[in-house]
Image (cartoon, rainbow, N blue to C red; front, top):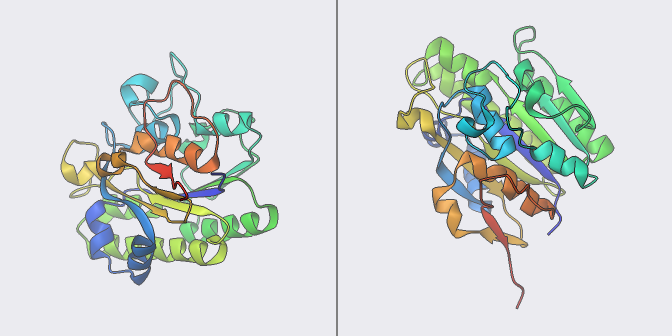
Length: 263
């Protein structure tokens, strides 16, 4: 298996919101894909610790990032970006929350684009268009597209608010646009870092801890038994499996897919 991959993460997109936002494309991607709508994130269920766990396939207690302030790892674990760089893969980041700049070590990315949601309205849409443009022009091996506005709306209006569900819907419109433009040449993974409740997250409340995980399907792979208990630390090894490269020996997660054996 040797696929190109786009990872789209919607910050704060709770599992229940995927069910309730009623975007028609969700059913299409779910029907054509594989995944677990009620996967689990890590504690603390906070944005930067969750992202570090996703990209480094270890728990926050191992990588040491326990708040939204980055601190250097005491016992460094090389992350997904470093693993891809070692294998000669070209990767690009598109994000609107600047703290994510520390997810990769300097020199690991071929391209990086940050459009701050605090300075530009509809930055999710702007980033989506930039990512599509860059992908169409340069065809990188891996793209990370982070859509951060959903979390901001959740904190402002609440995870049960109509404003929050409207923003989740808008995020899925961005996902649909990516899928319809480049979905034939890339495997697309859609997930979140955490959910939320009231106007907050960060606890072990199931509303904070449950996240969706959907992978666009192809004839070359099926879900492994691990999919039923998927955790955010399983995403990095799943990506390396899709891309046909080895995972890092320090990672703790397990790939959620396996190759189809042709008869």
